[in-house]
Length: 276
Figure: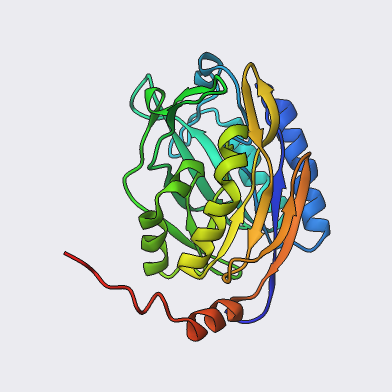
């Protein structure tokens, strides 16, 4: 893939109010497109962050043409309206388990077709000192395979939030040809302040890839706060765009030749050794 390609990350603070979240996302996507972005990435849980009982009521299947799917319809119509690659960072997908759903990242092309879907593999079960208690595995089924997809700038490796702590996941994406990695997230304020920047930069340096990390920010409901700091990082590990707080669009140009240059000058991916 030759030439630069403009990408945009949407940073937002989702609430339990789906209609408000979609309206806000639509405005931010339009702003991104007006700035020349051909690929736009939404953060994890863009459509809803709230009580699990309420989330159960808005789950949607991806493969049932007879089902009522207003959130999925919004996604497909938005991608078609702007003729963009839309990376939907975390879609609340219905599953066969009535108690648990999938946390799914979708790639929709400019004609509104789902080209790829990735179900979050690593689930966030923690009890933090600040009082945050999250047991994602109690309400979410894990995925079972890494996924890459082809975009306007080249191959993109998909991941979601807590996956960031597992380097082997990203090595598999690189082995599948990824030159960029997406990490849509709703990182907690506590873990974000401690680890967000260093983990994202480490994945960029290890994988010699661009890292695209659209984030939730601020207060969602009850004790749920997200860190913000949406980042675009180049394959040398330099932060080339960042938004700390507030609703925003973070924009940068992806240059595939920069990936090739870094990998040629410091061929660490070629130097990996498989140890028994």
